[in-house]
Image 1 (cartoon, rainbow, N blue to C red):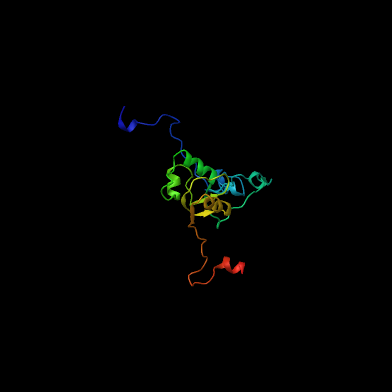
Image 2: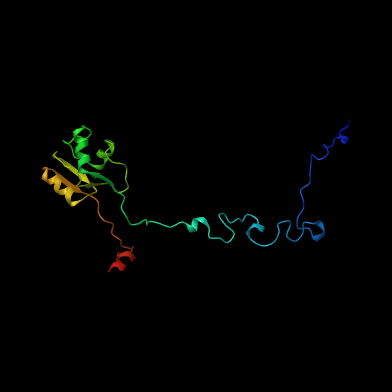
Length: 172
């Protein structure tokens, strides 16, 4: 055997069909893709297309609403707070903040802080600083002899010129 006699095995190398080279090649005009529509075009497939029938994702009912101006608070009932105090997870001699409550695994992480709600009973006298509180929660804390500070302020929707933004203008 010589170098000039080396060949591939028969059938080992098949040439790629050259498409779009005229009708006599057998793969001219539509290049073996049939005719018309998205599937005849390169890189374009309509996923979920059901042949003109209403697709499943459009047949399903749409539910809910996501308020882009809404606040994300971690809610905490005063009954749960009292339970954590009884279990010695929280030291009431110091000011209780959102970070203190997260460190004690009493609330989950939230974007806008902790909101105190009034379900349950509170007997401990405490100084608490939270982002928000319901009227019944404020009343319960003050009734137990403690103080409550609310730190969250509603955003001021003003534009760069200091005029009310579109949201405030719509309300007016």
